Length: 393
Image 1: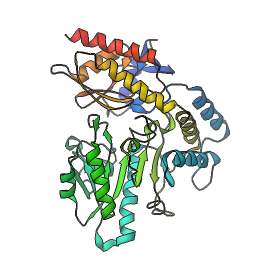
Image 2: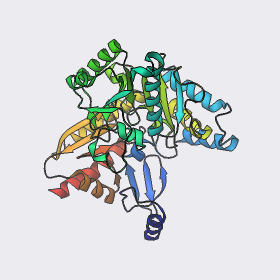
Image 3: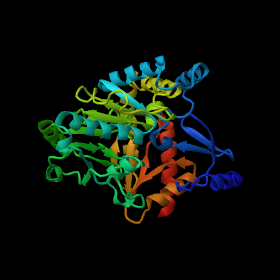
C-alpha cells in the first residue's frame, strides 16, 4: 500500500485530502482494499455508485456497449444515447436534455440557458443576466460554477470570478430584496449537500416559485447530489411539489460513470441551438448504457418506496444514538449532527479505520449509501459507528 500511495502522491496533484486507503475492488455494497480489508460503503463515491459495485444489470449493459462502440463524436447519432434521453425525459417530466460529463458541466449549461433565455426574450440592452444562488450552496469547481457557489471559503485564489451572481440566505425576504431588473434566474439545491445537508423549507421554495412565475424568472434546480432517487423520488423537487424550469443531474445518473445532464422544460427546451454549446464526451455511448441500466432499475415498481423505507430505518436507528443531536436530509441522503465535543471529521476517520466508509459535510457526518444497500448492511455499518462513538465517551 505504501508504495502505491507514494507513487500516487508523486505524480497526481495534491488537490484532495485522501485517506491512507488503496481501494482495489468492490462487490455490491462492500469494497476491499489492497490488503484484503473489507469496508461497508455508506458513501458510494459521493452518491455516485447508486447501484453499488458490479450490479448485474448495470454491468451487463455497460460491457455489452463497450463491445459494440465505446465512443463517437456528437456529429453522429447513437441509438443508446437516444434511448437514454427518452428514458430520462419520461421519468423526470422534462422535454429535452443536454448531456455533459459532470455536475459542473450540467450547471454551466443551465447558466447559459438562463442567460440566453433572457437575452433572446428581453434583448441584450436589458442586461438581464444576474443569477441568485444561496449561501452554503455548491455548484461546481469551474470558475463560473465556483462563482455561483455561495461559500465564501471557496472564493479565493482564482480571481477574477465570473460576474453576475448574487448569494443570499434561504429566506424569502432576502430573495425579494435581491431581485432587480437584471435578475434572470435563481439556482438552488433543495438539500444543500456539501453545505451541510441542509433542507430548504417548503415555505421558502413555494415563495420562490410563486415570485419567479409572476416575474418570468427561471428556476434552476441543482440536483447533482439529490437526483436519481436519492431522496425517495426521482427528483428532490417532487418532494416539494414543484417543477423547476431547468434541472441538472450527475453523480448517480450513470451508476459510477462520468455523466452530467441538463434537463429543460417547454419554456427552455429550444433556447440553445446549433453551436451554442457542446461537449466531446457528453452522452458517451458507454455512459449512456450505464444510465439506461440505472433508470430501468430505479423505475421498477416499489424500488423508490424501498429507498424511503431504508431512509426511515436509518433515522430510527440513529435516533437511538445518545451522541446524535440532529438528523437532516431525506431518504438515503442523511446528515448527522453530533452533540458538542464530538468532531465529525474525527469520527469519519475512525469509521474508516473500523471498516465503514462515510463522508462529512461541514460539521456533520454524511451518509449517501448505494440505493441498493440491504438492511443487514445498514445494521452492520451502524454497529461500527456505534462502536466508534462509544470509544469517544
